[in-house]
Length: 107
Image (cartoon, rainbow, N blue to C red):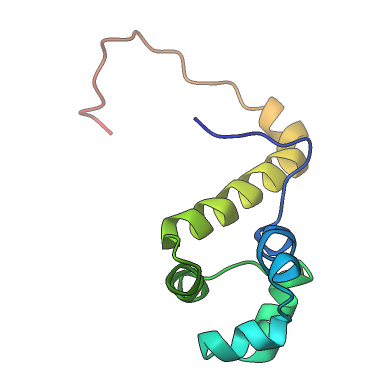
């Protein structure tokens, strides 16, 4: 089950508000501990860019979480924001109607 927020939460906002601010750590200090360019963490924390698997692995190691935690956050954010953008287009697509017991052998 996926959690829904009132608005999509960027993983950078979560990183900033739940980790950096409470720890009193700058994005630059975190980047140094992760052996990453300072600008990568700064841009994530400013919600300018998303997380990559590389960054997720490093954050997971440092914060004792999992890479899936970070990547799921990124994926949920992207799906929610894209779904809002595409809503009018998606409404025009008629779902495939099929009996429940049909298999997809011919696809």
